[in-house]
Length: 271
Image (cartoon, rainbow, N blue to C red; front, top):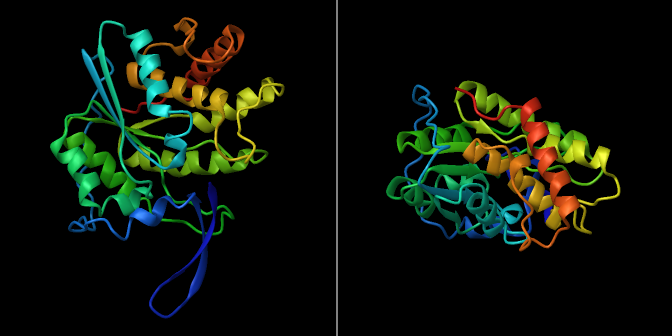
């Protein structure tokens, strides 16, 4: 569950900050092995690899509980297998649920990129202030982007959807990651806008679980459809009805149309 956590930072100041988190995902951080921190100055931005047409899509998900609800990796796998039936598909959710800056110091996460072979790295878990009063550094999110590109992996920034009734929150995290994208070419999935527009147009179809934070199956499907189109560069609205996904044909069609319409308005991949 994404919730406000009060932390002391600084050696003597004791300033209280508000963070957003999911459940106790950060509990893995203290036990993880550390690696040498990155240089203060990031390398010159590399070009964005285009891995949209592959014989074997190999997708790695970095994130928290938003990456695990409704077996998200399997849902994304089904979409890619359906739209790209001639290709193999492997989608893996990385262990742990740390923020992206904390992951950067975890040898296990770094090794997945440096020793693995991936076509796409999905990056979810940038810190941000729910009050909007604080700016959290994005340098290590950018460092993940550049590290992925050294391995010819396409980095995809994943701004999570807003909590129920708070569209501004989604816009906030999207804009934070947009600034990263502008300096370090990456794909930026417009998931908050897809949710916002769908909720506005189809108020009778819920996207959130009862907690008002996590996605229900419809919400997970919408986010996965956006990622499907970003990863494959194939229109989500041309996917067929998938009977193995427990949503009606009408609901699936509406979600497919929304994903593609949002990506028309907010193209994902900079060059």
